[in-house]
Amino acid sequence: MDNRPIGVFDSGLGGLTAVAEIMKLLPGEDIVYFGDTARVPYGTRSENTIMRYVREDIDFLKSFDIKAVIMACGTASSVSLPRIRKEYDIPIIGVVEPASRAAVEATKNGRIGIIGTSATVRSRSYEREIMSLCSGAKIFTAACPLFVPLVENGRCDPDDVVLYTMVEEYLAPIKAEGVDTLIMGCTHYPIIERAIAKYMGEKTALINPGLEAAGYLKQSIGAAQNASGGSCRFFVSDDRDGFSENASKFLGKSLCGEVELKTVGK
Image (cartoon, rainbow, N blue to C red; front, side, top):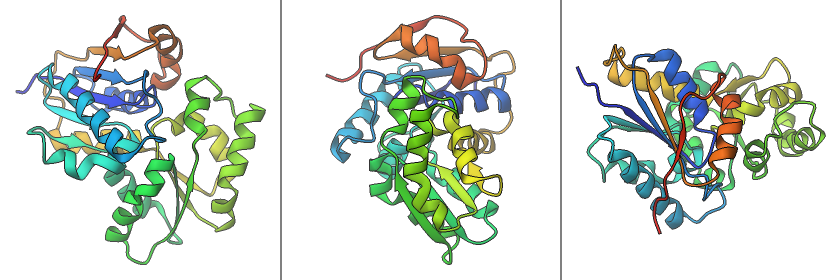
């Protein structure tokens, strides 16, 4: 039995959507979460900078002798995953592969939309993965750079005028293409799923990358290997109070335990 914890990281709060799903699917597992809130968002950074951040995040999590890493950041997964897996000796699971597989399984008309940060869209990682699974798919993308700051600042209500205005602006071209499946290619986006669903309509399947990554993790490690576990430690690189205040929206329940401050990198 491997009782070591699972490490999860994101640029901020968004990765907690993956943590919430891991808690449901693998309730006996211990989790160490790191939110790099001092450097959020990753989506506007250069590829070299993102690679450096990812290495620093994983190195910190490895100090807890973790058995696997969930890269619960669409930008990090899109930009760094193939290379970063070669640098570490533990399983590293991103969000691109599981979410792409779910989208291909969900679509009926083969028209799939992808929304994400600017870096995620530039990387074309979702497109490559989807085309490897379904070469006939028609794919439409849109960068949504303001979604992460809106979520991090608590602007999540579907009736919020600012949020819904940005949803309409970003998603109008994709909706016009008649997609029946939309990948919310950033773990922050499920928090505004109601606003996205309101605009896209009930016939559009929305793919939650955190949910799909948690399911992929369960397939990878099997049933919970630590039946007596279930703890979760939270670390951030800045703004503990803000993280604590908003975390419950992502986890779907009150935050248990103190949020600890940890500076990584230079």
